[in-house]
Image 1 (cartoon, rainbow, N blue to C red):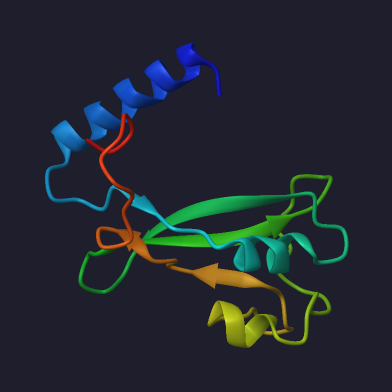
Image 2: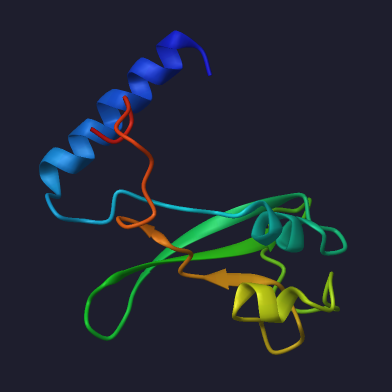
Length: 115
């Protein structure tokens, strides 16, 4: 990340925090979670979806996508332990992470992006 990128990212996160006091600031994504999603056959990236649960609380959903930019929602599982690790799978063993830990409480010490 260049200094200009960090300055822009800092301004954007500050704007968000100012307009959304008390809201989730970020999510913690483990390497194991990302590797399980990216390890699916044909997966070239990870897409993040935003959702709301029945109480209106924000949720983050991660899913792999293929070279045609299509979500990978069916097919064989990339790792036998993926479902246990991620806590959720699609109906056919697809690796999907539903609501990774939010910040807070999973937050960094104060820095340009969060304070």
